[in-house]
Image (cartoon, rainbow, N blue to C red; front, side):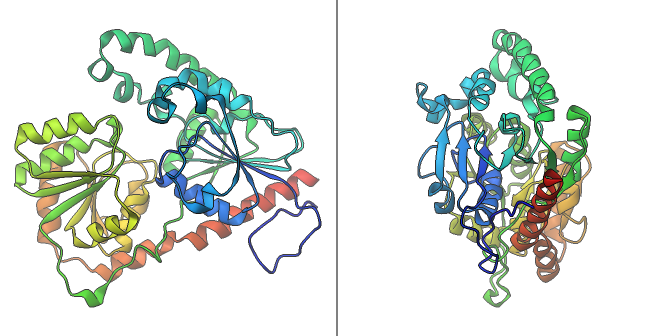
Length: 389
């Protein structure tokens, strides 16, 4: 049976370790998908990373130090800032990677990484964050007339339809899917007609921890930590806080940044936009905020678990992965209505309640990195045994 490499110092060593290829869509920041990749890298530290493009210095040292292969997208004009404009080229770029000499392929995919072409003998395990949203059920949020204009929206529609067909037709290139939530598992079933195993993403609960000894009460502020893209619906959080006259900090960047700043200015809302800040600064904001807000539908959502690790409640829209990561009335509040009114009422509710920070923290610990790595490695080992039969 093929023995796959791990970081376990007690594992038997072989003179020639099997070669592992990691495939990730792109590396432009240390967000949820990259934290999953980092946990996988710890299991397979000698793997070679394949990615469409990599903006150096934007991800952790563990990822940066890997041997790496990048696609031609890396060298397209202004790709570091405008890589999403090259979306039509992504299928060709991902299919040009040569994986013939690897014994195991692991992709972490929310766009095209799962469609890499691998050698027939190597098992391919895909950790799927989501089938690509903009090609399937969220076209309007990314490319609707009110987002990109009527002319561009009409141009994007047939292109996204072609991309969806390609995404469906290449779903069979994966031997085993791992979903980051039951919500995503249902999407994999719907769009790819494939089953999957759910393994929740890893959260560094050793870093995001509650400090009961501090005795510092939360400030009268709320917090959003998010990429600023349409489906996150950060404008709902801004409008709800403005209605209550509450302070809000929005950590993150993205194509929605200027529009969201304009919304806050028009409302006269007390909103701060620090951009992306260090993990230590984010942890400090978690601890100081009255609650963390997530008004969009998330595939899983690592931010709510990080906040809960710091003992803070989370106000989430009651759909998607939030139903699996936040316990209504215990670690946060599920908002059943997507309206600003409903979120404003939930903010009043979360502020009026007395929350048990220790119980919130205990729930977060069930999503720790050790649990993720054990479950994921077991899936890989099972796939290797099946492949050897």
